[in-house]
Image (cartoon, rainbow, N blue to C red; front, side, top):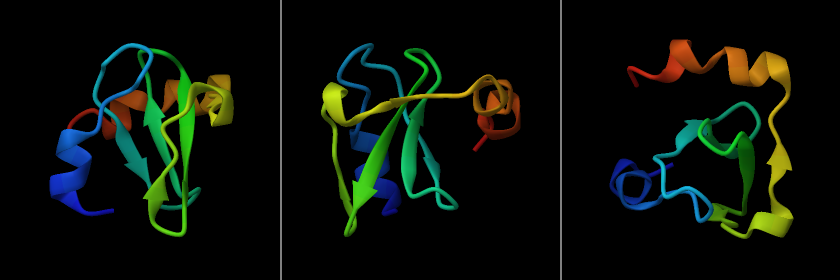
Length: 67
C-alpha cells in the first residue's frame, strides 16, 4: 500500500486513521473495529463491504499503533 495514499485515507465511519494489513490485504480501523478490503490495489471504503474485526485482530492494535 502506498504510504502517501494511506496517509490520506480515513475510516468513512469514524474518520480515524487506518492501518494497512498486508497479510489480509485489508485496512483496519481500530476505532470502528472494521476491516476494509483492498481489491486489485484499490481500497474499498464502503461500510457495507467492511467486515468486523475479530477480538484477536482488535487486541493486536498496540502492535501496529506505532507504525
